[in-house]
Structure formats: C-alpha cells, structure tokens
Amino acid sequence: MSKKILVWFRNDLRLHDNEMLVEAIAKSDSILPVYILDRRSFGETKYGTLKTGNIRAQFILESVLGLRSSLKQIGGNLLIAEGNPEDIIPQLAQEYEITEVYHHREVAREETHVSTLVENALWKLRINLKHFIGHTLYNKEDLPFPIKDIPDAFNQFKKKIERDSMIKPCFAAPDRINVAEVIDWGVLSSLEELNLLPQQKDQRADFEFVGGEAEGLAHLQKVIAAMQQAATTKNLILASKLSAWLAMGSLSPRKVYWEIKKMEGVPNTKAMFNHILLGLLWRDYFRFMFKKYGNTFFSPDGFGSQGLIDVVNEQDNFNKWKNAQTGFAVVDAVMTELNQTGFISNIARQTAALYLINNLEVSWVFGAAYFEEKLIDYNPASNWGNWANVAGVGNDQKSKSVFDLDKNIKNLDPKGNYSLTWAS
Image 1 (tube, rainbow, N blue to C red):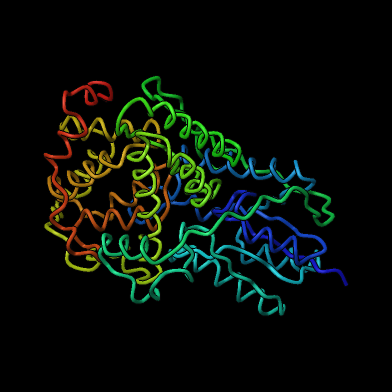
Image 2: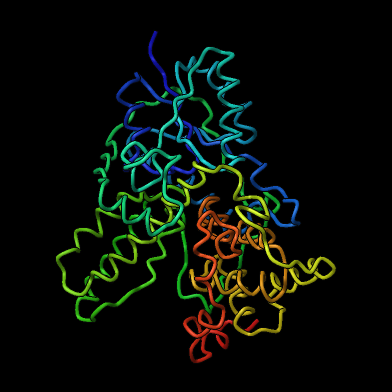
C-alpha cells in the first residue's frame, strides 16, 4: 500500500522553509495538502468583539489562495474545506487512506485545544498526528535552556539566546510535488459568506497589505531595497511591516533573518537590521513564554494584579475608545488608523493601550480582544503578551515602569501631524 501523508496547513501558509512539507514529500508516495476554514475563528468573543474582523479575514483568504497558487505551480493543489478540523481531518484520512497527518504545533489555548481534538480523533483510527515546530527564529531544541527555565526578563532571554544559540538555515522550497487524486479541491468562502463586508481603502493609508507567500517575499525584497537606499543615510530605521506575513506563516522568520543578514556589510544598514531582528526576537520570546506559562496570559490579573477598573463606566469607555471617540486627539487618531487599515505602529499600540488601561480604567483584556479582531498581523502570543506587559501583569514584572504615555505621545506625534492626518 502506498504511503499518503495529509499535510494540515494552519498558520504556515508557505512553501519556503517549511520542514513539515519537505519531510512529508520525502517520506510519502503522495501528499494531501489541506486547509480548513474553521468558523469558530470568526465568531464573537465574550467581550463583544469579533475573533476575526474583515481586514484580517481578507488577508487570511488571500494567504490561503496564495498557498494554493504556489502549490499549483509545482504540480499540486490545496484541498480547502470548511468546518471543524476534528471532524474533517479524520473523514479525509479515511476517504484517502491516509497513513499519517502532519501539522505545525501552536501555543495558545484555542489552537492547541483544536490540535488535541484532532489528535484524539485520529488516535481512534490508529493514525498518528505528527507535530512540527516552524514559527520561530530559533528552534526550541536549540535554546540554551529548557522551556521551564527560559528567563522571564526579555533582555536576559535576548542576551543568552544570541550568545549561546544558532539560527538554522532555511529549508529549500520544493520544486515539484505529487498529490493525491482529488475530484473536488473545494472553494474558499468569500468575506460576504463569512458575514463580513470588504473594507474600503482609506486614502490616508500609505501602504496596502495583500496576503500570500509571493506577496510576502516580494515585500521582503522591497524592505531590502529600502535598506540599500538607506546606505546614504546614517542609522535610518524604516517600519518593515513584515509582521502580517509572518503572522500567517507566509514568510518564515528565518527567511527574513538570512535575507536581511546579506546586507550586514552595507554601510549604515546596521540600525535597520537590528530593528528587524529585535522584532523577530520579541516574537520568539512571547511564543516561548506561552509555551512556558500557558493560559496565564489570558487572565485579567495575569502574573500580578491589574489596576483600578471603572466598573460602572467600563463598557461605555471601551466603546468610546474603540470607536475613536475619547476626545483625546492622539488616541482617537491611533484607533481611526487601526479601524481603517488594520495596522498601527508598535508605539501607537502602546499609546492606545496605556490610555485605555490608565486613563479610561478599562480592563486590558477588552483592548487585547479588540486588537485580536482588528490587527492584520494578529497572533495570540505577541498580542496578549504585549498587552499583559503594558498592563503590568506580564511575566516580566521589571517591565512595569517602562511604559510612559506622555513620552510615547511625544515620539508618536511630536508636531501633531499624525493626529491631524488621522482625525476621525
């Protein structure tokens, strides 16, 4: 009997640097690439927000279709289904006589719960679910410490990992693929079928995100070109805006690292290189912290105790904040940009968070849930980890005194141009 491996794609929508895909091709006669649109990811949260808003949903759909296109170019395809993975994957496994299922391991509670349900269902069929790790710059097994001993302080984590660990080379993208015979590869739902409306482009936005591996790789090359141009300007730091493709796994963090490292010898690019590398390290840090501490990051009190909550006015204050109606110009500008584009800078995120928590006295989890709905580059570990840190309930308690609203506003909008541009 021929060996068939089902490759379950989730937030790893790429061919390049994908160990799971490379091993599946090497160890099988044919593979069945599958993506499952789980409607639970588009429902409502207990905070009255959506799990996934229209801007990120559009980016997800584009990313999935981008993967299908990439697979078709090497002789394959992507089976697209809709429903619960724990129901669909066992059905596909039986229908196509699958011998093993491959997927990338996640770290947040909802994603890991779905993995467990799938694993249990497959176990009943005596089919193994093999886990891969491919979301981080540094592999877990290459860390200089076990997960339980990872330093809580980011600076210690960064120092030790850069000194004692190595970043592995990327896996080459396959140039051909042999897939199972499928009569109907499926159709991806539209935004409207997900009960969402397309976002009208805001003319104030200076950048447009389009999902998919090809788009992500093309944007990475634009970032590198910008770094080359920066050779004439000392210490220029540009916003790379790679995070959305990293969140969907359309770009590998290792691919980003090795591509920008090629610029290492070019004068005046070190600041930009360090800026991008720092972002990749923060992504790793929060992912490993979720692996270490699990669901503590979703608790309002986290690793400490959150501050004062204006219980009487909390919902009203939250609504004003998310609708850009606080009356505080910079914060309203930040929220307008977020609502219209799905992306804001890191300092803008901190500014909005500090105002919601300290000035409006709303529990930080409301803000984290709203960012989950709106951010095009949302991933659970970075979003909830960063919000917990700003709220002073993160695992690194030394970071409590780091955040300063007035200082942030001066850096974000020193001349008031930002507030004027994004006035709601």
